[in-house]
Image (cartoon, rainbow over all chains, first blue to last red; front, side, top):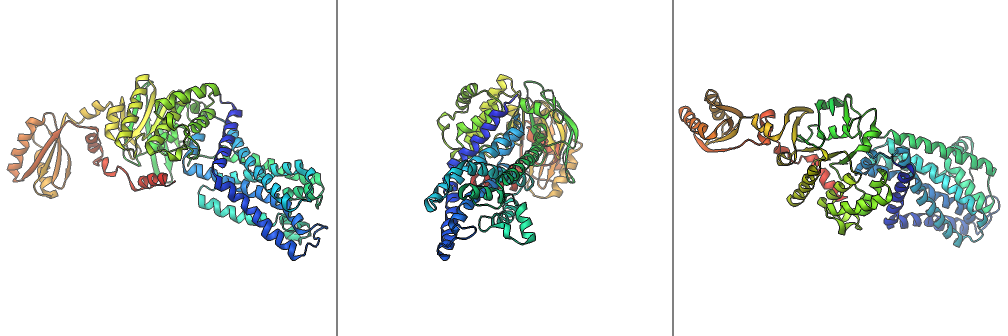
Length: 255
Length: 327
């Protein structure tokens, strides 16, 4: 009998080790959000001459909590790539013929990706603090919770996609096609509650909206949903997606 | 071990009602050209794929009903490299050991032992992407042995390796043979099957076409092979010659190609003069006659009419090997 805890631990260990080894990945994934914050956030703020927008805060303060979640989102969503690589280069077979339970291995894997995504979120938050010192750090635990469930949510979705789409190109394409609307409609750039009917509906169905909402609520006190509502929706949907991810990985074969 | 095992991909029967039994402590070889169904058979027996029909038992467990039990008992050396190239040699074995449920303290000990066995101690803390092909294969063997499997599957263990690495891997396998590990091995190298296996099945187009010890298979052909090369390169002459040899005592024509005939016979030294006589009678000029004891290669040739080596590394395989390097 293989201990599920050991199996999950070692898959977590592997994901994190791989990430630490690939320095370029770390640097790349940190620079992108910084560019957004500097070129878009600072740009808008100075174009508006620091005037308060969206509920009385300046644009950069509005935008920064969203960028933190955006970093978490991209890292987690694209983490499914590693499953595709593992299929392509054989390592997946190693896992599939091992007696460890698949639930344990995929759990460890996803938690590894969640760890990496949260780490990036925290780094971006630290950098955001340099630019927007007024962010309220007493909300930090809530940001961590939002980052955790957002990462879980999208690492799970990435896993589901990777279990279905077996080619690297296919996965890249579908992921990009999905990532763009999720990202632009996340509420990071502008408040989504003011959107017209169908767009608002799409936004409410977008799981990233709730992570951004919580992050902003935690760091600035602003938001359009009551905290328990967004927290409940986020946790429920991320756990649901996680379960679907486990189920689709259980069924995966090396073919 | 396998009973009427079949796997169909679309319209292709990759494995067609294959049945065989491997005895405990035996090295059982699956010999055949690329695309014969060897790897598919391994994928079925190691629970990576589900058979379309038929039954398979590994270490006493049913591959379909108790895949989990099967996975606990087997070690697999896949044809492709299945290591994590970003991790070090030691880390790869650590991951492998923990997903196979080896307790940590014991695992550390075994990793040390096995790194010594495959002579990679000095490379333990290097990333696998810095390893040569032969070293990667050796590390994979270490991984496959780490959890002391009852049945070991080796899929083309020396494919694409230089002769030196090949010899080394053969030594490891012979060492395991002495220890009495049950091994199921696929190969398309004759000498590999001849040297390592207790018994060999010859497989082609998903079917087993012969099964026995290497000696038995070779004897099934008659004891010696004579190759006759004609002066002219014409198929006509060769066919005429083959026709003529049909009623020569003790000779069996195995293959006819333009300008070439192979004949199996009980005693080559007696058959050769008769072959010359016949050639003279038919006015066919002979350029060269060679003979040797039959090898598994000849057995394969006889059974399928094709040479194994013709397709030693097919296009697809070459791409795969290059792919591996590129990454």
